Every structure is written in structure tokens, then in C-alpha cells.
Length: 427
Ligand SMILES: O=c1ccn([C@@H]2O[C@H](COP(=O)(O)OP(=O)(O)O[C@H]3O[C@H](CO)[C@@H](O)[C@H](O)[C@H]3O)[C@@H](O)[C@H]2O)c(=O)[nH]1
Ligand SMILES: [Mn+2]
Image 1 (tube, rainbow, N blue to C red):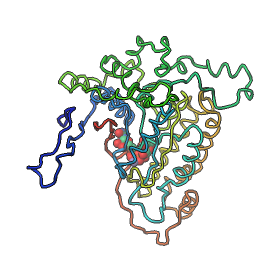
Image 2: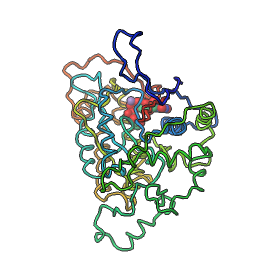
Image 3: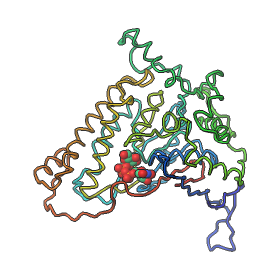
């Protein structure tokens, strides 16, 4: 852990540097490298488990109301993209946004994109279309989250917002049963509504675990993530100047608490991975995690910046690419046959989204299944042609194009989380 910066600005010293930094605040953001505890007998839940440990540790150490999630094989290509994402979050009504998803863009792919690594149909058609409905799906990286949405709360004013479909299209009985279908699931913690009885703090240790630091940080993150109350139309706003109060400096007891929330037993008998944080048990945990938020009524935004916000690497040899798409196709099938199928969505999910998400899965299966069929027979030229036709890429003129083995499936690596308050937490 780098030494945490003080709250006061620290201006550069002219004598020590040839450049004049006398009016520049030279503090570095706090950087923490975190490695969660893993033990035999405790499922670490792969990426979803890593993300949940990061969310808890960062709640204790900096509690940024917004969190940027980047995979280890991606990097920031446009620092101004953060501001664009935050504009959506801070806009009027932005407090009902759970995340801002940026497109995934890749480097090092051959010009003909023979393995369809750019996923053009998905990132430039499907995701843009979903943006016009309830918002894009979460695709695992390049995503700016509202911390409170990750905690499984309903969006603010959820009672004021009626479902997106016309009530008369549903038989009365069905509508009533949709909203009461699973009281445990739909009766989320209505932090933003502040209607007193719905925020039952007594249930928090069962949901979030026994860390009182963590539980106390939850209302703070909710408050700090609200839009500025600078206009009468801003409901539930944060008064100007509310964020300028000095922060507590990290001491040994806070660091000890952060270590305890990343221990392998912390999640036992809590709702981490089931209703709180990244959801466990799916090979495409990202899609399920985003879907659960949409199902509570949160909206998301697709933010396509002129200069790519982030860039990453993709598997550029056929075997690795096939393993990747096999995983995605497995995830799609798995979701289809689970309670996370949008056909069973709650009444808070927009009707049009309910209709479209299964369509997207259909498209995804259409694209990915041919890849999967190819897996055992990737050398057959005929199947390769089918594969390329399905993924809309050109067949290369020279089949022996040199493949670089940049990545292998499930390559080791870590998640990086930026807590968007100037402090950085990483694993
Ligand atoms: O046991 C694991 C496996 C993976 N990861 C992380 O997961 C991320 C994605 O893994 P990668 O091997 O790069 O998979 P991709 O197929 O490239 O990932 C895409 O698909 C995944 C869902 O299948 C999403 O989670 C990713 O964000 C998305 O970029 C990486 O940053 C890894 O650090 C872990 O932390 N632990
Ligand atoms: Mn990757």
C-alpha cells in the first residue's frame, strides 16, 4: 500500500525540479494492491469472488461512491472518458443509473479480424440498441458502477416508476403476482426512498457480513453518490459542499478491518454472491450481475466515446478464441435455463427489455454456437468457412497467417478497481 495522501493539497517544490510545479497539487492517489485469502475448502469464486473482495476492502478504505471495473488485460486509453461516464451519473435522474458501460475495444488483432474479436455486431449494434431500452448489459470490463447498486438496493423512487409495459396488456392476476412473485427478491433495501421502515438496518449483518465498518459505509456511499442539489427538479440531491468534509486518515485498525473482509470465510452465511455484489455460479457472471440490477429497475447507459475509453487484448489464436466463445455460449444457455431468464423478469424490468434480451441471446447463440461446433475440428477448412461466414469476417487469402500466442484461456491475472474519488484500489 502506498502511503495515503493527506487531505491538504501538496504543491511542488521549485528548487527540486526544473519545471515549475509550485501551483500544481502533486499528491498521488492512494494505491492499494490487494490479494484475498484463498484456502482449500473455500470456493474463491474466481473473478466474481475477487470483485466482491475488492468492493468490501475499498468500502473500508476509501468508500468511493463510484467504482470502475477493468479486466487485467485492458488499460485506460482515454482519461477523459471517466468524466463522460460521471456526467451521466451526476445528471438529473442519474441517481437511477446502476452503471455506465463502455464498449470493449481491442488491439493486436489482424486487419481482417478473422476470428471476429472486435465483436462488431454485439458492441456496435446490440449494445447501442439496448441503450435505447433499459440500458446495455454489463460485459465484465470497462464499466463504471454506482457502489450502492452493487449492494443490491432498489433504485431511488422505485415506487414512482411504473413498469415499462402497458398494464392493460397483462391479465390483472398476472400483474399482481408479478410484483409479489418473490417478496424476498423484490423487497430490496430501498435506501434511496428513505421512507423509514423499508431501510431495516437489523438485516444488514445477514446480508453484508459482520463488519460494522462496512455496514456504516453503506449510507455514506449512497449519500455521496447523489447528484448535486443545484436545481429544484433534482430529487434526493446532495447539498453543495457536502463532499468537502475531511476524510479520516487510514490507521492500522482500518487496514486490519480491510484485511478481515477479504478473508476466505467472510462471506459465509451472507448474501455476497447471491443478492449482493457480483453473482456467483455462472461462467458469465458479468451478464447475470447486470441483469439482476436491471431486474430491480435500475437503468444503465452505453457510453461510446470518440477516442476509445479503454483498450485491451483478445485471444488471437483460434483455439483460445474458441474456448472464449464456448464459455460465452455456455453462459447464455445457462442463463436461459436459470431464474435469470429475462422472460421471468420482475415487473420493474422494462417490457421491451424483457422482449429484447432473449433476442440478444438468440443472436449470441447464433454467432457462438458455430464457434463451439468448430472446437474439436478447427482445422477443417469447410467448417472454418462456415465459422467465418457466421462471424462476418473475411477468410484470409493466406491460411497460414502467423498466430501470436498472446493469451491462453483463463490466463492468470487480476482485476483492477478504481475507486472514483481519486484513490485507487487494485488486486
Ligand atoms: O479465475 C479467474 C479467472 C478470470 N479472472 C479475471 O477475469 C477477467 C476476464 O478473464 P479473461 O480470461 O480475460 O476472459 P475474457 O473472455 O477475455 O473476458 C470476457 O468475458 C468474461 C465473462 O466470461 C468477462 O468477465 C470479462 O470481463 C470479459 O472481458 C480477467 O481480468 C481475469 O483477471 C479472475 O480474476 N479469476
Ligand atoms: Mn480478456
